[in-house]
Image (tube, rainbow over all chains, first blue to last red; front, top):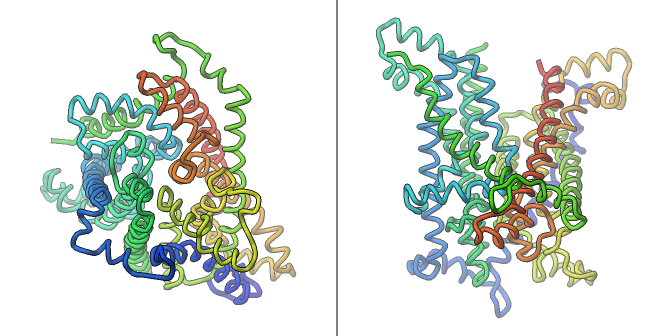
Amino acid sequence: MSGNPTVGAAPGRLARTVILSVVGIVFAIPIIAMVEFSLRNLAGGYTIAHWAGVFSPTATVTYAIVFTGLGNSLVLAVVTVIIILVILLPTMVLVQLQFPRLRRVLEFVCIIPITVPAIVMVVGLAPVYSVVARLAGSSIWTLAFAYGITVLPYAYRAIQSNLSAVDVVTLSEAARSLGAGWGSVLWRIILPNLRRGTLAAAFITVAVVLGEFTIASLLNRVNLQTALVQVSRSDPFVAVIFSLLALLFAFVLLLLIGRLASDRRTRDHRKAS
Amino acid sequence: MRPSVIGLTPFAAYVLLFLVIPTLLAVLSGLFDARGNFTVANVVALFTPDILKIFASSFWISAVTAVGGAVVGALVCYALLGMNPQGTLRSMVDSAASVLAQFGGAMLAFAFIATIGLQGFVTVILRDLGINIFANGVWLYQVPGLVLPYLYFQVPLMIITFMPALEGLKPQWAEANATLGGTRLTYWVRIAGPVLAPSFLGSLLLLFANAFSSYATAATLISQGAQIVPLRIRAALISETVLGRSSTAGALALGMIVVMIVLMWGYSALQSRTTRWQQ
């Protein structure tokens, strides 16, 4: 990996430092600008009043729309994770165990949502949702059906990288030959081995759902993003503060995913050596 | 009891209801008129100068931000080469890239309004230095204003997609090059360059597709008008769904899908060439 830097492909220390610091600084500017903006006082100077307002006990009343949006987005995140766990995960395990020939088909299906832009989906989702509203009402959680499709490529990739690293076929055959039923094979043998991939899929799902705007906005539903746009018209400071908090939350979430992945990598290395 | 084909039905039904049917409805609604008769009139209408201009500016913004994002992102990947993948800096960069690649939408628009808006952080600093970035008019709320926000998610996406290819470069190739008397320049021009080319072009196409299909940032920044295809679809949806039919939106959606299929087909073709070297 390392080797002599004059021979290998790796850059010199100077080139590396210059590139990383220039790009790093440029990418930090908008974040710094948001922090600076959120501290501005309309009358000039700086104040923490906007931040204090967001964390004050009356905030849920003052910024009711944002908290409704946040609540809706959290409900949607939970329901979408459930859809992934109940519909996608068992299908992937089943295909891995029983229908190896369908693996490519499943992969293809799960990648399609990258090719179909959300704005195109919305055109077709509008009529579908008028039927859904008639059958299941128009409560916010129904939107999770559409979000489950949006997160399909990400969730698939997270689970699949775990699934292909574990020999589920041998594991399930061993369990079966010891007399375990399919239920306990799935619940006690396979799922515990897929904990990392499943957790990573759940995290990326939460991150994507919290950032979703297109579908909610054009189907006239309130979620975190549409609420932020709405509140930004009357109080841009609050919109910026919530954006910063959402960004921080997503960063922590993805740092955790990275930790999960690198844990697995080190474990695999140890196993291999 | 053996799990069988029945076990696949929930997923199949779900994908059919919420992926296949909406996509077909979107695309087909462009091919039928209000009375349900087949027509190509809406598709033909795509080739009017008006709509072609909108597609052209969508292509322009996608191309500019794809090339810019690919070049800067590849430079960052190069700078990260040879660092411990488990190290703190690498995992911070990885997580930041994943967050920022997803950081689209309204929040990104707010970030850039706070940065280069009329009263933005950078605008004010530059104004104090005597530089007016809006001397030729306020371009932030026009198509050119999308370039910087789009780059903000294109560069991280490039880092995520291109890094595996760079890490696939085998140290033996560099050693062989050095043993045979090659310089670092010959290494990059004659070995790493050709090996990385398909992967770089593939990532470029992916970035293009990403910009082409993104909606939320543009919708928040450009609240009025329809300068790019996704915004034209918004305009069509808002004006037409009242009547229950959205033929224009359908035809535009069809146009977008055709572009996306070509892009993703190219991407997967290039990707399969890439994996040849990553055994």
